[in-house]
Length: 252
Image (cartoon, rainbow, N blue to C red):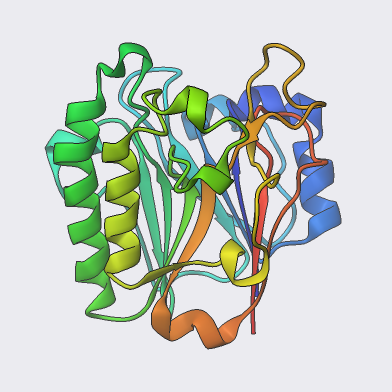
């Protein structure tokens, strides 16, 4: 099974930048998108690749946040959110249940400039999301994919020293990601690739992407019990169209 996750920074925008061509070329079994910034009726005229069913969780606020998943295999069940109204208005989580695992597509809140949402994110959202994942894991293993909006270690961004208190690399955010790892979730990319220079997001400013001045903030995490099934986990930095690039997980 081949899974792809991509923060597209607006699905209506990326449809004009090669999304469908990329989709056809890569032929995933499921494509999970974050920051769709749209409701399904706003792209109703689009013909998606044949054989895929669309699942959406859009934010209440127009043009904001949102996740979607397109899957070949029909899930046992699909649901949006984590079951908490306080957190579910922004359309940040979409879960597809299959026979032997849950696939959770997430767009983690950004702590914002001046860290105005840091307290909300790290004290409320992150613990609630982690509880949700652990509740699912009691039933069957979990795959988590998406934009987690954090560079876990200094190897996950180009300039760690100058970004220490910037959103996405605060001690608090890194600690919350670490709590996920401590709870048994495995960062699949690091099963295959070590060191720095491997990024999934680049600022549009200062020619950052051609210079590879980036951050690795998009992940596939899996329950430890799924690790033996992981065949590969990789980043596709050559794929343009968004300020993020896609990440890929292949399972036996």
